[in-house]
Amino acid sequence: MSTTDFIREYGYYAIVVGTFFEGELIMLAAGVAAGAGMLSLPGVIAAGMLGIFASDTLCFLLGRYAGGHLKRWFPGIYSRLGRVFGLIERHDEKLIVFFQFLPGLCTVTPVAFGLSKISTVRFMALDFLGNAFWTLIFSLGGYAFGSAFERIVRDARDWEWLVVGGVVVVGLVIWLVGRALSGRWAKIG
Image (cartoon, rainbow, N blue to C red):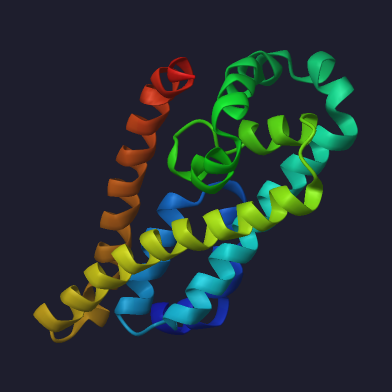
């Protein structure tokens, strides 16, 4: 099985699972694969939204139904929630739509909203909107890069692992910088 066949066969599943845990890097790589013609862009967007929405929903429901236990089970995460509650009080709807763009807040923010008084339906509707916006930005960015690379290098299939590896390295650097700056974002609130 060639690399292209492997990506075509399992790519969408990998996107769903990958975005459930960490989205930026996966969506950029998936966008590159779509731009290079290995996956369809609508399929990449749908798979990314499914994974991210499932992750956010699970975290929200954990906050809603197991919030009292979080303090004992995960004291580190619970201590970070105090900062998020401050952001929720000032910017609740905007925060739901844009928290995916704030490094270090992707997991704790849905948990904090689960602990808040917001309705499940309202959170899920706004979160879906935010996920759509976030997924489009990252997948289209990767798609533009993949399309440009496909045009520049006629036989991009020989370079696909290099491109995917490069996107992974760049995404990892972005993620590490984001993690390093996440304390600063949390302090803003």
